[in-house]
Length: 363
Image (cartoon, rainbow, N blue to C red; front, side, top):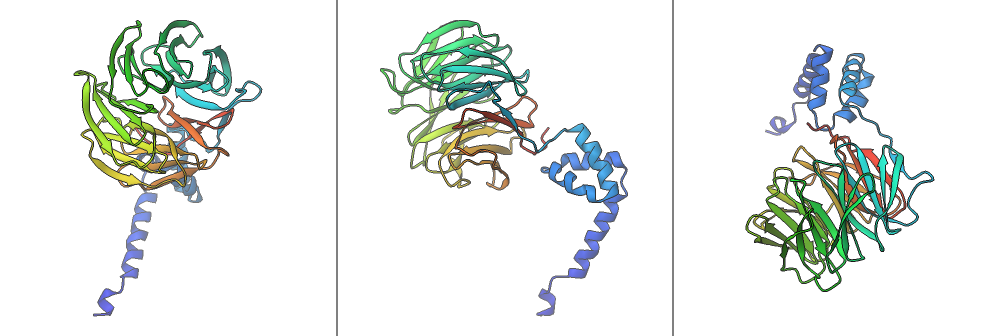
């Protein structure tokens, strides 16, 4: 009986050798396709270069899906004079950074395109509107502003309280802001870019620090103190309240299929929720408060940024961490996925933003 419980090492070794032999006899193009389908294919492709056959396949895979371990820094002599509060990314490859120095900077690659003197106080949030080179910025000065990427101010929205967060709806004509200190504290306001206030969602009793919108534009997600709330755009009503965080909710995000919500909190957790408010999972990925989230297009993975200075690439279904990024020396305040789906921009509590590959190959 004891012998029967011993792992069949020789059989396992033979099976592994057979698999390696099979893979190395595949045509280069087919082997490169297999590499592309694996989640951490870049890591596998990099180590695969110890084999001549796999090296050729890996080279083909890298040509199809470029990847670099290098981190691009957006600063040089043109960086912000005070720390960053927010970053955003546009479909045409432009990146926006907003700072306590009251400016928004527009970048392409690591080149500064222009500096916009945006607000009278800190720029706290930004969102790019789909379908055109426009974005909305929010500030502690009690306004949200609509700009073109060329720096033209199209409209100022006097919201009555400090703007802590902004998110754009997919129709390119609406955006939502979360309000902090002021007479409208705790409101989540939906605006049309023409200046019309569509609706003010009320229910939070503390400053709204985070907002997000589902990909179909049907739901708004907001976070304030211990609570995450889900609102219906169509009925202008509360759908659910997500309870479970023990400290302030700093960031929320919606997965691409709109079925799962992520929240990051000062209690050092990332929580996964259903739209009906059901808590699916609680992940302790960081050693300090979680301040930033970005969902990946494969609907299985996301990035989280923390005051502990790290960024984690993790699986939203089981919390498995695939990669930890350590290229910041200060806490990470904001994250945004670039339009190619393979890179992300991160804003730390510094004057410079950074662009990096997350290393996960996704369609």
